[in-house]
Length: 404
Length: 176
Image (cartoon, rainbow over all chains, first blue to last red; front, side, top):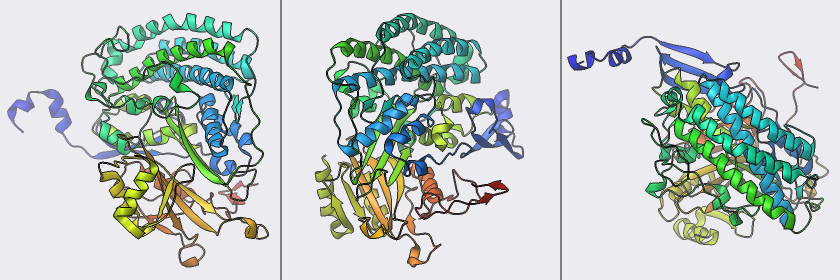
């Protein structure tokens, strides 16, 4: 070692090799978001390997799926990503509808867009609040839950449930909107939209928050593609100015009529006025780090609000019924469909038996968090133990979806 | 490229190695032998006009009617399928690649069938192959760490097989 590096105390600390130690983090650790167990191989404070162990929440959803009719499986999809139950219902319904070749009336599609985007906001609010909690700030969590509560109230009025909705179902949605719901939803959006600036003041521009997230856990675009990451995890690693495509399934392979709505796909860099927000990339943040993944989610909330407002305008004049009758038996063949859920591309692969059964031959749920989590080892290499909650939190996993 | 263009390009390159194809299916697919899988998928990934650099999903499907009375009318011979869902980031087209396997290697019950691994080509293959091994019971030859991922390490059997029998007991926990 040259004398020059010895003067820098931090380099000296990192250069001293000690015995490796295995540290068990989870499955009851608060910042592993559920029952995820991470086995860390550490050299002092520096991580050399992270091994995630899954399966603590495995409930055999795929086996259940091939023993019940598609419409009976909808409640099980709620329990996959339990923070975004509506989006999970939608993903499975669309896959079955693709297999059956069903075409939905306009009203069902408008309702689906409205509800799915409202749930996306609720899910991102939890993601943001819990991420602040991981990094040691408690108050954003309370603000996020205050607003989420209002969304849950709207959902409760809609379908009676606050977490496991089963509202979006095969052939449309379960019920039409109750009287006055649109007005209350509009009231909520008018209340909620200015509050987003508060979150930015609390978190996005907070000096401590930026120090904990900027430049940490950098995921390169190549690694993200190799592991088929999706959602904010992938978009946080793309570069709009380098000509990367707007990788959002709502734009690329539109379903429910998303192609007729006006919204932007959030892709870094955030150093100009393209998205119309007053905050710029802080010093030290690079594309693909935890801060960018977090900020992509924050801006997606704004786009979701735009989508809901457009859908609310269309609802009174939308044609058709909110629901059509699905066929009693599944046709033979197979269909695979991915939809853009808050955490990434959720795919369902449904195989119908050739001799027309009521139950599918196979249901496969491809989880987005599952693949997003599989890069943990690669992006945690060489970071400190204290950075692990920051990195795992920025992936925004839900174990119910990973273990299924 | 459309699905028919992709499959035509593959047929001119590989000829009879593409065992069968289906363009009428909802998601067009090709079927290859296990021994040709890595070669075909590597070409799919590395050829610039195809550029299938995303492997979204690997699923194992068990085609078996466990009830012998209904087996004649099931409409399929008992076999396993491993299904790969590919997409291109640049061109955005999709393709499904299937591998057909016997339910048991050499028709001897208990011996799991084998497929070569794709972990050298895609990072996402690692965990998905572990999951297919865990739940459907397919050995991925050459996988760096082929262990169970969702079930316990000492679990017996592969639950997504149609003839799987639920255990009566696991470490003192009653099954039913």
